[in-house]
Length: 210
Image (tube, rainbow, N blue to C red):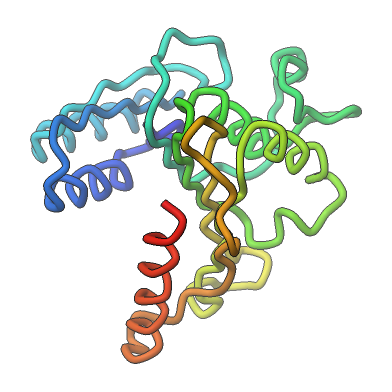
């Protein structure tokens, strides 16, 4: 599931990668409140022969969408304007508007199956502010923060725009806290030696913890 699917590029890349690695019967869900972007996503899913259901709605609204094994999203960053709806989430701000990316992470954890994985593109500095404390508490109560990997700074125009990949796992009978939490920064792909070394380290970490 992608809570903010947009034109569907991220979902298509991930689903095709899974299919190429012998995963069978992959069924996807995509949500977006922009019907133009959903139209593009629909065309792309047909061209790529993806089994993908698309929903035109606010991802933070109540929905009948089933729970997912995996949720991925390049999260929008900013304020969520519907304060009354945000109040239904534990991570809402006590005063003023809430951060939409905090609310979406909470929504994702709630919508994952037990032991399910959430992978999100987030601002690299997201956990550096005191405003993130309610989100951290929610994650600790409902899941495990398994990894936070910064993307190369050279990919971004400014320090403020830098992003990271956050990996969470919902609590369940077969899930546990990774040891250690995978932290670091992706080397640039063109830095072949260090990139291959880093990916080998990630593979070892994955086998140990999952």
